[in-house]
Amino acid sequence: MPNSLFIGFKGKNNSSGILANSFSPQSYLLTNSFEGLKKDIEKIPSGYEKAYLFGVDKNLQDSFRIERFAETGGVLRASVLDLEGLAKQFPLYGINAELSAATTKYLCNAAYGHLIEKFNGNAVLIHIPTIKHFDQAWISDIKQILY
View (cartoon, rainbow, N blue to C red):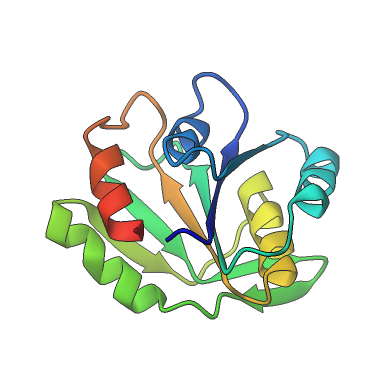
């Protein structure tokens, strides 16, 4: 997707940043703080059609979780992307993926809420395993899914 943005979090061992950077040069890495990430997101140009945010969940080992909603400031926001269709693509590449309607109080959720607002719902948060459980072979598969 030439007009898609890929976003992760900073940190040399952060699998979300590694994955987002694999889509370079169209990637951004966010600060690992609630105050900093909002400023980072405000600086992102708004001309992208879609934003893919990768976040790390230490409880994931061999699967991904696609988030339907974000809750920030007491406001529930939803992606308008075809998340069901997206979730069906992962198993075609041997990757387990599930949709989730739960929200959290973590940094990823806050970033997702800001991105949904900035891109009029055309954003998605995909939680991935930590670097310890991240399979580097997934990178080419995820590129196939998202391109």
